[in-house]
Amino acid sequence: MQWLSEKLQRLAVGMVLLGSVGMLVSMLICVADVTGTNFFGWPVPGTLEITESTMVLIVFGALAYTQEKRGHIRVELLHGYMSPRIKSLMDAITHLLAFVFFMLLGWQSIGELSYSWEMREATMGSIRFPLYPARFLLTAGTALLVVQLALDVITDLGRMWRGEGPPQAHAPADTAKVS
Image (cartoon, rainbow, N blue to C red; front, side):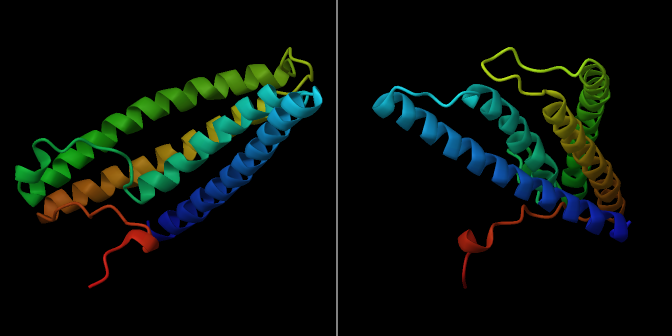
């Protein structure tokens, strides 16, 4: 299971890096569009279409990485008052529910990807931009998240069985406390 976790982490980091490139491209094209429109009267064609597609990459590319770091937002009204075993059980239930939700999302996204690929779906804007790459990235990001959630459910149940509490979220290096 450690091998799978390491491979999944590498894929998740790759998706985050790809999402970062997408964010950079989106930012640059939006700046060029605003500058071109306001100063020269020449908007950049296809800005909306490219930005829409890169948003899918940015969001779904980071889901598995954020889950692996346990960085998703959670409300802890009762969590802090529970024993370590119950905390692990609560996390297992939460991750199981998220697993079911994203499994359904992934299942539906496969159908949408297949349909989009078969008909070579493209936008109707000023530039015909293909939509199936964004649908593929949505499916890939969801699949990575589903695998990570499955690993987390197994890990949480193991911690619960041993009476251990869940791990803390990993803080980024620049915000970690220095003692």
